[in-house]
Image (cartoon, rainbow, N blue to C red; front, side, top):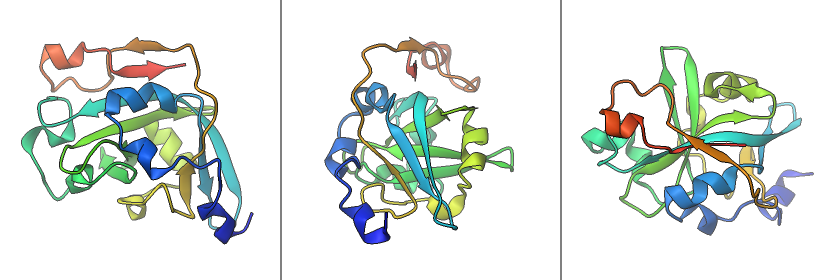
Length: 177
């Protein structure tokens, strides 16, 4: 597939898909191929199997809980762009911004293919800060393709958010196949 074909790929999720509410989109991403074109042209396609939803400034586990900052400003864009951030000074986290302009919400991609754990996934896909703000509808490096919606998944509390109040730690906004 050549680069010009990517932007017209009928299997790629359209920008409008991402402009729905985060809790609607999160389970819909399960089973969809996450595609990364590496620098050598190789395409990696991994099936998304685990995601977590983060919803607005009222969600005390969300990076937007303190309002807009330099780190999270992309979350305030209209859905369909990538929010990358670094944790522990070594692991990049891949998030898909969803919803409408000025309402910060995003979905952390926790696992795809054989890569369980968002840090392992980002490393396998060679993702870094350069993907911050990447447009999933037009990117030649990273996108998500459509696939039939899975009819089965489970929900559990989100992981690694011990800093949040109990009500936000216990909410079932983690979706897994």
